[in-house]
Image (tube, rainbow, N blue to C red; front, side, top):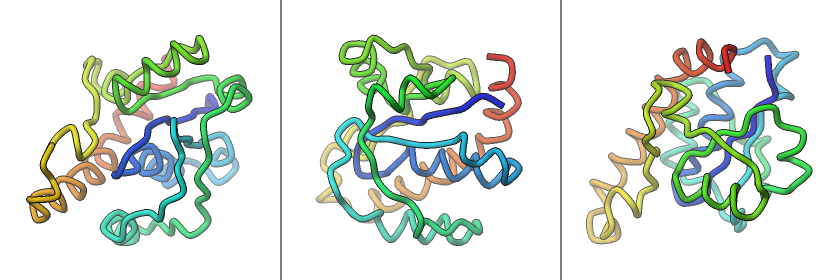
Length: 155
């Protein structure tokens, strides 16, 4: 298996969900080859909705530590996967590194997995819809992992 780095930023922690969804499906010896990093990586706790949904799937996020994407992390990764178009653009512009979109790897689609503010711009006024969207994203990434893992070996 190739080493994989998932990159994103935002309120949903899409890259963290992807990291742990892959780790849940690979042999323990391969888990150290999977990671995530944020474009901004501002210290913030993982939202209880995300933590709870992954807990339901058997994932404990307590060992997770946020980190900012660096040249060193990118150089160590065989495959860099961006969750959003803006993340892919930052990686290209700031580091000269190409990245595939998550949906591109899974389904051959040039589509981002939208962050909360992209999907629901006024999410603060629609907290029920925001919560439902966050849970949908976690489930979407989780459910996409079989497709991701079957295609990643061919990249």
